[in-house]
Each structure stands twice: as C-alpha cells, then as structure tokens.
Image (cartoon, rainbow, N blue to C red; front, side, top):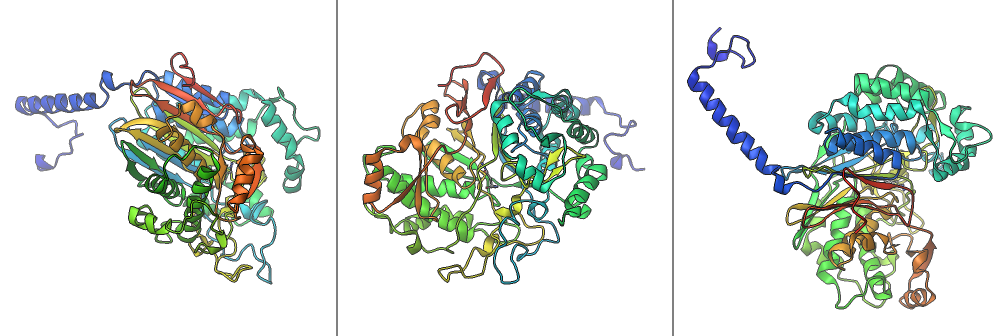
Length: 583
Ligand code: DON
C-alpha cells in the first residue's frame, strides 16, 4: 500500500522528528486556544442544578462533583426525574433541550414525540366529523412515539464527558432502592387512582388504599428498564423487550404504536431561535416548539412599542401585554407547526417590520376583541403538567431542558412490565383542522395530524446571555402559559431591574388570544385591578398559580445562583459549593 494512504491510526505509522515537532506545536496551539475558552478567569464560581425534585437535583449535583459537565448532569437529573417525579418526569414522553457551550456556541435538541406512522388526521373524529371527547387525551390512542431516551442518548454522545453508565446509574439506584414520596407526589398518585384504574390493570402504583407522604415507592420494573438503557443505549428502549412491552400494552388496548415507529424514532438537532435586545441575547427553542418564536415576538414588540411609565402589573401593563399576546398566539395557531412538514416563516415572524404591522391595531385603552384578530380561530388548548430543569457547570456549559408526558401521568397508560407511563402528546395536535368552527372559520392546518409529524409545543427551554456570557437559564411547565411565563420573567429581569428572586416571585398573568380572557394569579386578584381591566373591556379569570420556574442566574462577577420558584411548588436548587442565597 502506498504509505500516503496509510490510515493515521495504523501501528505502522512512524513520524519523523520534523513531523513530531510540527505536531507538538499544533497540539500546544490547540491546547492554548481551548484554555482561553475555559480559562480560570472565565470560570464560574460553581456549578448548579435546579429541578422540580430535591432527589433529582441531588443526582445532578453529584454528577457535577464527580467531574461530569452540564450535559452529564442534565441527563442524570432527567433520568432521576423519571423515577421520583412520575407525573411529568419520564421515559415515555419527550421534550427539548437548549444549550450554550463553554466555547460560546449554541444548539438545541428536539426529542419531541411524533405521531405513529398509522396516525390519521381525522383519527379523533366520529362518523359525523365531531371530536370524540378524551380520545386524544387518555389511553392508547393519545400516545405519541416517545423521544426522551433517544434525546438523552444523543446529548450524551455529542457532549457527555462521563460514561453513559455513570449518568444512568443514579436513577437505577433510586428506582431499585426506593424513595420516600413527597407530600405532593403522594397526593398526585392518590388523586389519579380512578383514572389509572380506568386505563390499566392493577400494578404496584395502583393500590386501592393509595399513597401517603413518606411511603417508600420501589420501582423494580423501572429499574430493569433503566439497566437495559444503561447497558444498550437506545436499543435498550426502542428495541427488544422494552419495545415489545410498550407495543403490546398499548396495542392490546386498541393503540397504534408499532415496533417500526420505535425503531425509526430520531431526535433532531435544531438551530436555536435567537435574537438580541440591547446587551442581551435570547436563545430559545425553534419549531416544533412555538416557544422561541413567540417569546421573541412578545419581547421585541414590548420593547419597540412600550408606552412611557408603564408600571409592572398595573392594569395598563397587563392590558398592553395581553394585547400583544393575543396577536402572538394567533400567529402561533396560524403559522407554527413541525418544520419538517410545514414552512414556518421564523425570520419574518420575529422581524421588527412585521411586528410593527402586526401590533398596529393595539389601543392602549381598549380590548381588541380576539374574534377581530385575524387568525384561524381555534382555541389553544393545552394542559398544565410538565417539568423543567436548568444546569450550568463551572466552565460555563449551560443546559435548559423541558420535558413532559403532557398531562399529569400522560395518557395514564402504564407499561407495567417496564415501569413507566406513556405520554398523551397526540392531544397537542389540532384534532380538527380545516373544518370550519362555530364561527365558520378554518382551523390550524400547520398543526394537523400526519404520520411521523411532531405536534406543536409551547415548551420553551431558554438561555439569556448578557454581553455573550450566560446570564439567566430558565424554563417552566404550564402548557400554553409557558410562553408568557418565560417572557414575563425575562422582562422582569432585563427591563424592570428586579433581582432574579423578585423576577420569579412576581405575580403572573396570561392571555392566549382564545379564549378571550386574561388569567391572573390569585395574588393579583385585587378588586380595583379587576375593575380597571373590566373597564378596558377584558374578561378576567383567577388562577391559583401559573407555572414553576427552575432558573439559574449568573451575575457579572460570574457568581451562580439557583432561583427555584419556591412560592409556587416543590423543587430545589443545589450548587457544587456552598449555596449562594437566592439573589
Ligand atoms: O408541549 C406542550 O406545549 C405541552 N404538551 C406541554 C404540557 C405542559 O406544559 C403541561 N404542564 N404543565
């Protein structure tokens, strides 16, 4: 063989002294350029993990302490959530991760579920073309092809530092060794007993007497599945016995998930949606999430058009933002869908020229009726159970990851031999697009059901940079409210000079175009505010609480603070050093 064609890994490859010197030089140059990306002065004061469950955050922190990077920690935390937070943490669901690399690059991974190959656009309609209640929400037909495991495998392959087994191991331990149920998780398992029984046979999770706080939940079947995943990677889930258990449990009950659907599932690397506002850069999730586009539409419109002296959470402020939100959510319904099936005009939708035109009809004093805002006139119907985690390591790698089964415990269908719930993500498609609604208008074609298509999402894992440095990593559950929640939190921080804790604690509100209602958190249920909004023509509804931010804040001195939404739910921030107090 001509030595010129000798592969460089050949044991016969011999370097001359000259070649060695050149290589050494190259190595030194490349090391020094790596160093400059992770130089000591650019190191953060600590790594941090924030998630909705203390045991999961603890797993993430232990991985960072073991020398894992933010990706390792995010993956391990996510697997731990599948064990200790079964209403939203999952193996049988999907999600998105947005990340920023220590060298300054960005990226995102779409591990959203997709429709099975046998899905049909009218699969939830009866012979009269009416939507059959609950068919897309509960049980076997509501299930999309799960993406979480493949997502974790891909994230790890590309960016992980520890071994795959190391990052899956803590979840196996939690499933096998058991964990004490928190009060809220015990209540949730108890509250859903009836629906579990409707969809499944009895299993360990569905005892007649229910569960109490402090009860130990052992999950041996889940531990076995996690062991298979640890040993075989994606094949431990998408092939073999786990695939058999999933397809049999689902299809014996009338579902359509095939072995082929599982085998061919792919996670997709996507360009992030990002734009700058002053010194800040917002990096968020692209379609099939509507989050990145909608958050940038909201932020840019607000910044361009804000009237003077707008006081946060005054009636003028809530009215103005609701008017912007109506137009943004109407665009969402009209234009957003799986980019592999429909063309989404991202750049136009977030351009200043378009937004100026789109927002032109806003009157600062009066509600513009949602019915008068051009759009497909379909309601944005989403449920409210998901979970978010944020991680940063000392080198500045950031991962913002949101995952879901959609509803609490997803479809409620539990794969008992494998120990996990399946999602009901098919409900995020519009079940009846193209059919005139009660106003005679056409529905959202962009999000119609099609085989292998991903359903539109609102999940918005987001990273805010300040002068190029990571500044705020955030995300939340909350279905359609995720978008306004992330937007309001960013606005509180970068526009209203609130501290991160004030920004996250601050009472929230939400408008999503249809229904034409402003939702206020109960902390805003003040009679004078409500009557001022009514005078402007708004209907108002009071909600207990909106979302659950799990955020990380990094100040200009590179100190890292965990910002868990402590007034709204369980969860915890854990740093690798002593906890800095919530700022
Ligand atoms: O992808 C979506 O937008 C929904 N399936 C998310 C559901 C959700 O956030 C429920 N959470 N609290």
